[in-house]
Length: 504
Image (cartoon, rainbow, N blue to C red):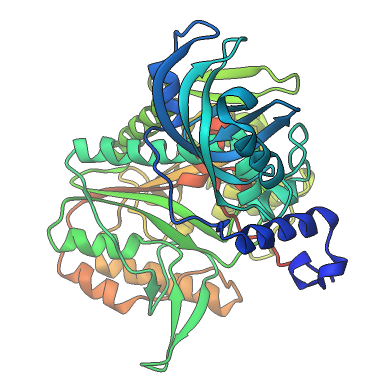
């Protein structure tokens, strides 16, 4: 077991932690709180930099400013101190000199301030002899004392596990971590703006549900004491969003959390953010074009153009053009092309099993043709796809909430958007016949009886809602975490501020 410094006796603390605690106690004894209520800040670092972007070296402006930030660099010599303050907008240099700041102030800085401390500084806006914009301090205050040393400024947190577990430290020392938080915010804002411009209404549906549904996944189970019944953290909002269409809302979307009791790895997190969209009198082609526009606008919001980026091993950045209409391919046709032979729902099961065995897929002995075709597609087509492609018209048996294909009743009007080897989103022409939906649920229940823990259960209230008539509609769902991965090339752990990690 790892013993944290807080749990250690004072004499056993790491030296740097002990020294910083002693400084804290000294400041308190001197009547100077190391944790201020605030500071008279007059500007952000970024605004000050913008205002004085063109100052020549060695200029004294006569302008006073109050700035705040964390000390991320601190260089002290006999008669001068240079420090870099990092606030939420930018870095800015502050200076203390013997002749302008005074001996007392300079000594206080030398003895009180450590790397990592939050401080507030007031003084004149100047440029150094080297031209660096600075605030020449005539007063400062420690606003929050940092009791643990920061990681090495050059190496940062080199262990990926430590970056996730100590995300707050990662955010302090690594600009890319902060940029990801800001990019994610810009993407979500862009999605909202795109959909609201198309007259979609943003809604919220329950996280706690008496019956989980809307996807094939294992739920998290909890319990409500007031009613003494089990509840489920939702695996998808689909069935409640469709209830809204029944109720007369024609264009709705939700950006919110889903929870699936699955493993956590570089591409999955048990808690994730999803977008779902439903449009009355649309179909899977309607929402396909809408999804393409949503993603292109999101990419433009963070990169200035509809592109995705990948950092190469040598540090260079490769861009992929996402503009225009993306390819649309038949799922079965793409699989046939990958295999170099025609396959389909009429292909005999023994032949499909032989193909699966040949490429190393282990499938249940009761797997149907549709199941085998879809597994082969995932292995051979999805994994080999890079830039976005819509693969459409999947076997109906694997899409229990999707409308039967208008030209082939064995297929469903469903597409998967695939890029960089993984599914980005799924779109349907929605199943609106309540009796057909009941039969699909019953088939899912038969899978449950055979041991499929991810199959759907019957939702009687949803079926009753459909009996009040849901209009024809198209719907789609996609992960925001996965979208950030596909636009930036990073892992899911880098795109989520606080991914789930196993306790130490």
